[in-house]
Image (cartoon, rainbow, N blue to C red):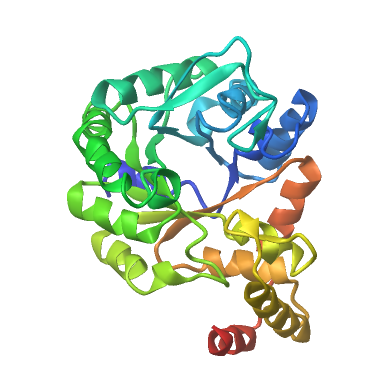
Length: 324
């Protein structure tokens, strides 16, 4: 087993996602953020994911404040490259969905030197000696648009990928990958470089399993692990088809809401909560190393852990397969 494969074998089944710790959509105080991370640790989670984007450094800072007190070899940490942060003396209250983050402004930089600077900046904010998994962030159409994305992808492969590949070879990071919202970009990255893992959000879920037809078999064949995020599709698989529920970062269309209502009814018929089925579906992905869940409180992460442990009748999967 390679060093990267050994590292990735340690991260599952659940990890804590750091976007909410960066004040995603609403502010979170430092004490509550710390309690959330501590509760994740108490419950046995040992994988933590963050990014410079999340609160413009705030998520990294808050995670580091807790993890610095833990034995370094007892947890796995991932962060991302592709955005550099610079001082902003007059930051807006909200930027990129993050409310009252650090007074730092992000700019895209997928260059070789930009990736190295990003790692250095992240280590400073975290206050840690190393990052275990480095991911190239948001080289997808969702972020850059269909016309600009191919150029950004090439920039990342020519620049950031070479930097991370070098750091992996030197043992500075243990594994490298990308973090995106589109499975097709994962496929393209696997054709263009030697990656250990892919963090994919929202494309292997009860509502959208588009990654299952091509990407998952490809990862299994190549020995590349998936880290699955966004398994509730921006919330609708956690809340159900409630008023204001979101799907893929937008208010859910009526057809999606109706689909979720049917899925929820099937789950209820087997005595299973909808979010429990959503979590277990992702956890059972044959290529998955871990599922990352975000949390804004100790209670939320405890609930996710409990849901992940819910037994699911096999007959429910048969019914859901027919529905999909």
